[in-house]
Every structure is written in structure tokens, then in C-alpha cells.
Image (cartoon, rainbow, N blue to C red; front, side, top):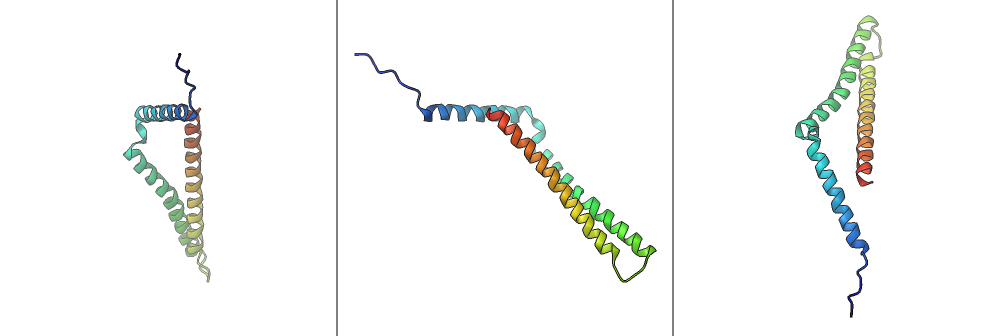
Length: 111
């Protein structure tokens, strides 16, 4: 009597595909050294500066407007808030673009 031929099971092929994806991801991470701890800290600093610079620029512009045109309204506070909103929007847009790029990269790895 001959042994029945074994059909490839879906779980085995799924497992092999999963292991292959992880191996490709690991090799890519080893080849891409820029995504280490220092790179992450640098990106956090970049996001912080992208919020802080427009906020401080708005406050400085507001101080200048208040000194040139004294009145009952505080341009310093208004432009500080406007700079903060602009900086947060800029940081959110940048992080969204990076997330989209990472997802596309991940989808390329899965294919």
C-alpha cells in the first residue's frame, strides 16, 4: 500500500509565508541602519521644533504688533495660539506622511 500524498495545508503555507515576511523585514531593518534609537530621537526633536518655531515666531510677531499698535486686544496671545495651531498642523501632516510611507513600505514587503 502506498502512502497517501500529503496536500499542503493552509496553516502550514500561511506559517511559511509569515516566517518569510518576518525574515525579509528583519533583513531590511539590518540593512537600514538609520532607523535606530538616535534616528528616533532626532525625529522627536524635529517634531518638537516644528511646533516650537511657529509658536515662538507667532509670539514674537505678536509682541511686535502690540508694541507698534497698543490697544485693548492682545496680538501676542492671538498670534501665539495661531503659531501653535500652525505648528501642530505641520507636525501632524509630517507624521501622517511618514506613517503612509511606512505602511506602503510594509505593503511592499508583504507582496
